[in-house]
Image 1 (cartoon, rainbow, N blue to C red):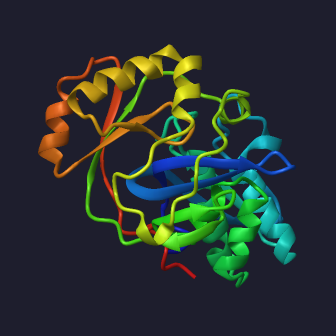
Image 2: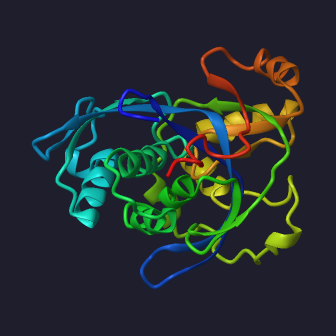
Length: 279
């Protein structure tokens, strides 16, 4: 990978998501399994000799000071006292507010890519901590392995997950993560699981009930999809719903039965993040 490369920022699915409690600082204690898939955003980088960090493709509606790609690049630049600059181009393929971790994945790819391109030599574990200052989901994308996550999502037990094909459906609504996590009716007392004994298919998503109440479109999508795929689950705080299948043909058969106005995607589960080997 070099300056001429396109750097991937894959989506994640939460194969379950339990909320165990809440810390005094407002962060939630959780357990989840993160699974990377072969659908995501793409980033390109060009060196600058003026030390400036410029996003050539601003995301509509996102102020520069809140854009995670800019914040990630500036954070690494400050952390390493690097004098190099960069121009960043971001191609957004993932829906915003979909629960797929797009913004967090973009930030992680910026950290990993610029650490490599600027040759700043920061260890992955340090990049994970730097990512945590940007958002709770950023560290797992830096970590680069499918895993059982705990704490606020920053403590990992790596998993070898079986191959799977996922049908992902977006109902066309944008879900604000903070509003779902901040809902007073959210269950915050699910008993913890033992990572060593977790198996695929175990668990649920504690955020689902809140999201369905706030967004009837999600509740309707879940009901329709579960008629044909009972294992369907919401990922993250929504809005996307996914179901796992043994192969693409089975996923396509269900996809063909869904209303045409829903955005659908068939994706393969990845064995690890595509940038896991970059140093």
